[in-house]
Length: 436
Image 1 (tube, rainbow, N blue to C red):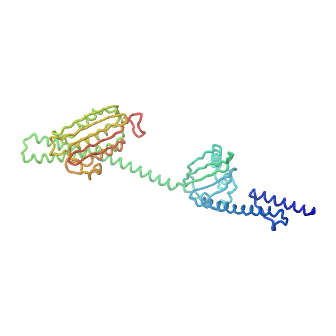
Image 2: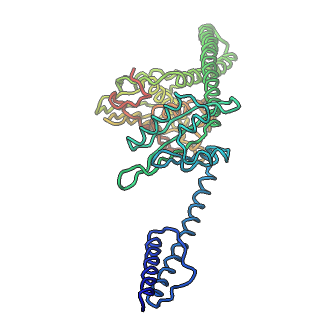
Image 3: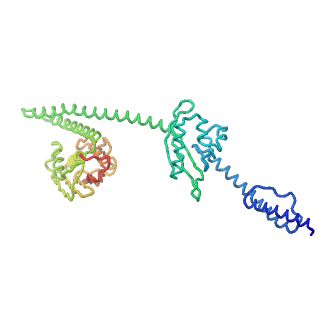
């Protein structure tokens, strides 16, 4: 080999070496049109061809992946923007900026360029710049709610978030922002708030109407019962006595319905008032308040109290629970077993809860009716002349104060209600329960 051939061989080797380096670094380049003539370089050329083919294949994969992810970002129904490490726009999806030409113009420009292009105020621009700087400095995502007018003067509402992505070295790699328009949700919220306000007003007016009307209705009922008592002080013919008893029975029933309506109105309107409660005293008051016409002399009422801790409760609502359930136990006694009839009331107070049991040996509740006894106006039998409101009130009270009730009843044998009430210790009160 002469000197010229050696120089040509060395030049070709250098050129192929540079190509190998470019191929290794993933830099685009073109292969020489013909393989080298020298057998010494042909093997190197073949290795270079393989590197070029692998590089082209990887480029196709990368291009396909970029197209795939860009298609996803383009189709997302939210605003998506990506800034590079110099806080220049690298990507903007069509939801963020609808104009194709503007999107292309923004690539490589800063947010300040865009804000000035859109004639946004310097104050608004400064706020955005400070937000970007804060996110980069803290390394934490930041969410913000914004309301702005569109070109037609309509107010649009957005929830936007900006978060940074850092390289392993700790340097900023990109800043990603996305925004979701919530204009329709805000409008729905405003409509819902308006309807809730109207509903609260209507409910308050209805409660007030029911409360006042019930009191107005009760006055004549009490007068009727009083007049009946006066009539019986006179010599009443036996033929009229039957009618007096019928009138009294209906008047008592109407009075019971009115009482239930008043109580229901009160538990709906009155805030929960938690106070220290004496279980024995509360039980005595509930027994005293049972209407006279409900009492049955032959039925024995017994009660026991086991207070192992101080009891904190809403005394008004707890009183309603006791009086309604004890009244029911008396109303639904078995007429054939009155002489042996009983109602047993047990109250046990512990640190976490109070348990009230009311047991009777009355007519019991048929199994098919038990799922419905707490429904409004449900009456499984006409015995007792109930309004169908009492047990509904019991359920409403328990839901309001966080209690629960269990029923064990067998037709023809008797019924036991077990009530579990949280002991509302002052230090354990939830925010919606205020001690009285």
